[in-house]
Length: 347
Image (cartoon, rainbow, N blue to C red; front, side):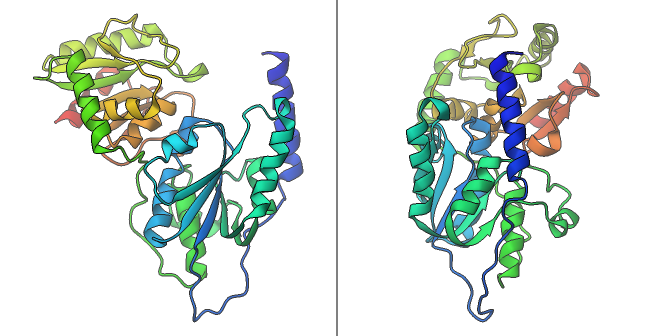
């Protein structure tokens, strides 16, 4: 492990220790005969990773459904926000921290002051473990604040409360219930990047140029970061088994930005650096198979059934859901069992 990595680990540990007790979910005194109507909401998720941004989309949909005229600002890192939320008309502004704050310290400080400049009705911190998230929620100018701390009432009512996409929705519903709103019991919205008809049409043309269009397609993604990445010794037998078991389907590998393949580029492949183009391509396939990663969440956001492979991360926190998507614990699920799961998905 590099010296820089070690320094960052120490820095995160220190900041979490210093900020863990900052703020608590805030209620103002209200007239219970007059509901609060939230018009401006700030969502705090100061993170640059694709998966973490996609996991915000269910909360944005929940806000849209509850307050159709509400405008949303999002506090993030990096430049993916406008891409992920391109077709969310309610998302008005992005307050963007530089990915490397100590290389751009002046701009970093300016961004924090932007949070204070606008008056919000409500601020929602997504990750209770995020020091920057808690600080920004505390710093923001708002009447109502959700810091994301664990709530026993939510834990008891929702067995899936651990999921990073679902907990903020449950928290918002519980909070609104305390303010006099009707408790919502419907399913949490799915992760959704909201692809346009044009994006889907272009993706179908791209897919047809790669493989015969008289067959349906199974998409595989063989890459992931760090320990989440399965080795070629794992993926090669899976690929061969898919070929022999599903001769009536195309098998296409979606390649990562690193342009590497754990099966040695044996399959027809699709490569793009455009997040929305990748999502649209996956949307035109029948099922996506891949390890826990940003692309797995992107596949989920495309509304395609996803078989998420988990071996080191916690499925309950990051598993794909909706559209018949499921998580597969490969520590206890062998190849034959995985193939049977794929059969059920395609039946």
